Structures are given as C-alpha cells and as structure tokens.
Amino acid sequence: MRKLQFIAALSGAVVMASGPVAASADEMKTYEITVKDKVFTPNEITVKAGEPFRIKMTNANAMPVELESSKLGFEKVAAGFSDILVNVRAQAPGTYTFFDDFHPKETIGKVVVQ
Image (cartoon, rainbow, N blue to C red):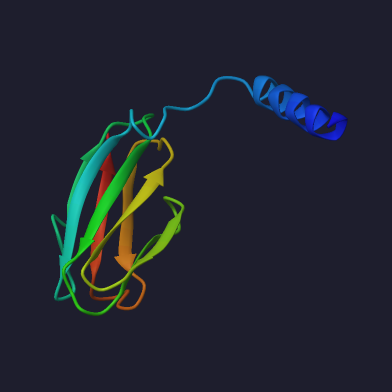
C-alpha cells in the first residue's frame, strides 16, 4: 500500500512541477479533411499561430492512408473507410506540408499558419 501511495504522490509532484498544461484536446480547434483517390479535400487549411490544433482525416478509400508531416510532428495510419485524429502542437507562422506516406509525391496538402 505504501508503494502505491508513494507512486501517487510522485505522480502528482511531477504534474505540478511540469508547469501549465497546454490546451486540452476538447479545447483545440479541429480541422476536417477527406482523402479520396489520392486527393486531400481541402488540400490546404489555415490555422492560428501559437495555438495547438488537431486534424480529423476521413479516409474515403478502401486502402489505408498514412497521414504524415515530419515538420508538424505526426504520422498515423487510417484504415480504409475510417477516420483518424492527430493533435498538432502550436506552430510558428509558415507553411507546412502533410502527405500520404504511401503516395508521398501525389497526395499532398498543406497547413498555413498565420
């Protein structure tokens, strides 16, 4: 029992020491995109600088799609005819690309951060 109390106390101390917590997933703005036949719709989304956000991607294909962006820090596979969510940290102004890693030269979109 003491071991569990120690772990619980330590966990609380770590959370308190880590400082303010970023916006929760419920507070983040969600941008929806669909991919079908190697095309993202829309293929460009505009977000606010300095605010975390998330992308909900609907895969309207029978085959899987891997939504990826090394600069935005995500990589996630969506099975055929399914949805995925990716959380993205706040970004500095600029233009960042994302793509289907199974078709990286054909299926490309971008996030414009303003």
